[in-house]
Amino acid sequence: MTVVATIGVIVLLGFVIPRFAAILSDVGGTLPLSTRLLLGASALLTKVWWLWLLLGATAAYLIPSTLARPETRRRWHAARLTWPWIGDIELKYSTARFARTLGLLLKSGVPALPALKIARASATNLVVQESVDRAAAALTEGSALAPSLAGTLPPLALQMIAVGEESGQLEELCLRVADTYDGEVRRALRTGVALLEPALILIFGALVGFVALGMLQAIYGINLKAF
Image (tube, rainbow, N blue to C red; front, side):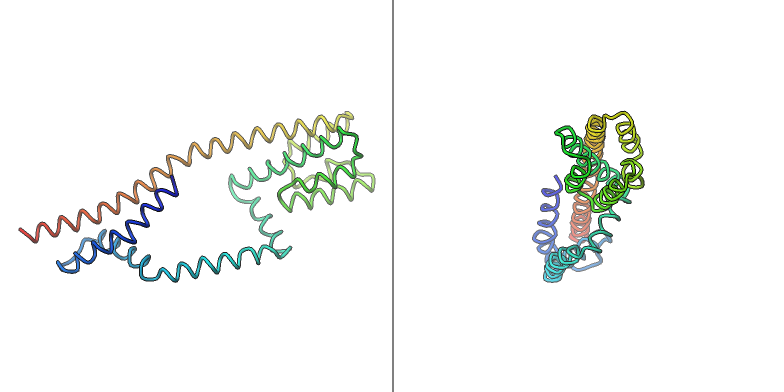
């Protein structure tokens, strides 16, 4: 929907409106505000297209090279966790992947410390990976796993891991953590998609309506001059 609507607006601004502007320039007179805004947007797209191309090429080069730096990439991952809704989903997704990998490894008989080091790679966020590294270091010193992961993983996951350690069923509780947060991520994504679709319809409907309004007002003004 977004791609089709964007292509439609670009076609209108890049090809239809410039021809419409040539007709209006021959007629002369004062144009309505909506038409002037429409013509300005069309000129910005068609006359400085090279600037948009340059900005796109610059962003395509700078963003990957900047994120390749470890410290910048770490700050980017940490910032993502603070975003509303998106950060919560990413943390739950990383927690689910880490917990599922750890639970499966422990269930297969892999010792806790090697299992932690292997499961670390399944977490998609660097902040979570760093927390797992600290937990592995604390585990070698005899500390419990759940307190070592505190401050990064969600509270419910920490509580379930702590219960698993105390009861001797860590692998089962890790898999239950994974199932819990996988379900929460799926529900959050379904809710987001359900809300995004009508929002996109309203936004692009308003945009196309504005384009139609600007053209119709100009045509109406031309007809008034003709009579």
